[in-house]
Image 1 (cartoon, one colour):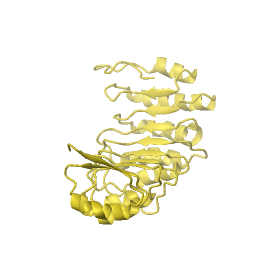
Image 2 (cartoon, one colour):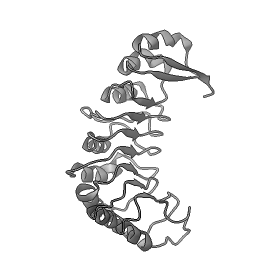
Image 3 (cartoon, rainbow, N blue to C red):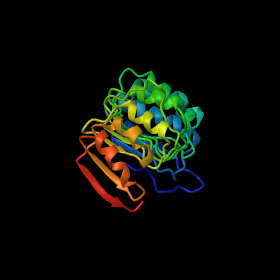
Image 4 (cartoon, rainbow, N blue to C red):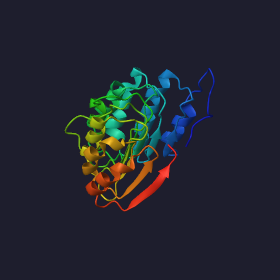
Length: 252
């Protein structure tokens, strides 16, 4: 359910009608567009309603509030929702466009305190995440037994997770448009060496093929861009014996 119009103008509308529908179990998938303005006091009420719905057995399954800055006044309600009630939640897209790892702290704290976590998809793409992200690491570690897709596209080229982070169930990792430097890319690949069913979408540099390719030994598909130097294909093919499909060059 996408709530409201693409933009509400200068005076954001109260969320009362939406909160009533959430509590009644009529909203299982919720999107708040980034252009929609939400009253500061309504964020805590939203998380309270989400918690009530989950406790009643009809919680929201997917929550997309990417592009919104959650006020600190709502942190307590957010913590309660994530730690005590968000068992139905399987897909989550969060954070404002200029968000850093520090903005993930309330989310990481809440999920880390939860007894049951069923989150399968996390989208924190298009933010300002850079360097070792301790809070992102804590967040994904809390969901490590269920997380199947992680989208961190369009963040900084140094984006990485702390050492010791493991993602054993991850099937899709989206790193596109991060322009990752070599150490960051190697770190991401080392988190969970790719299985034959894994999907990796990333912009990589041909000069680093000998370094990162061994970590993707089970890679079965690869799409190359015009900037990829054909001289590096032998190294890639030696490191990835399962590689069977190589798409022709396309425009960058």
